[in-house]
Length: 265
Image: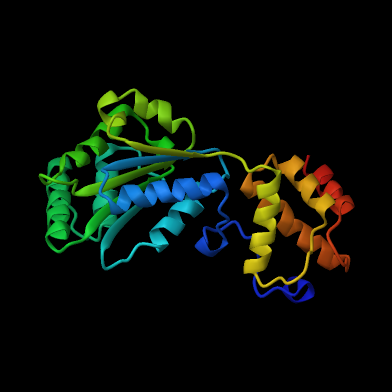
């Protein structure tokens, strides 16, 4: 609706996991390199945690988008099912199998066959479990840990990436034999003031913007309101562009942001 008015080619502030709009703060950059290392070097398992709305899913989608499908077989599980058998079945499905085994033992056997076949053909198998803090109990975590037992003499047959909110870490810590295998761990926190500005300008640039739409004062208020949470930044910026279009404003100033904040709180 407001694209032409602001001189944009596409909407810059959508809450969808489009890797093109991932802004790399220092933490985001370090997390990406850590996960890339875990995956490409067959490190077995890694964990990414972060506060709600801090960009975990977007970063993982960017990670996956950057992997060559000819070299990697990727199974992405979003919102893990409530039982261990259902989760293993979902992993099997996401790895490309339409077969429906009758029980846990058959599921594990078929996953093993896929892992060995991928290794034989030179493919690296990666399983990503997003929102892993939703895993209901420790027995399910133990089922997942068993997947790391599939190894060759010199490498793991699978790289497991757990992604979730901060409560995921203490959950996994209660299973020492699992936590110790998570050799690579990274965390995403809120952005600081400079990165809040950087995120806003970066997204506008990707969307085709060639002029400063948000004043410095407006960006400062956005940071204070959002606490540096990217999802909150994106939401209020989208609303500000809409209201600016409706009111035919030349720029987004602090007074509009303050008005929007007061309506939200």
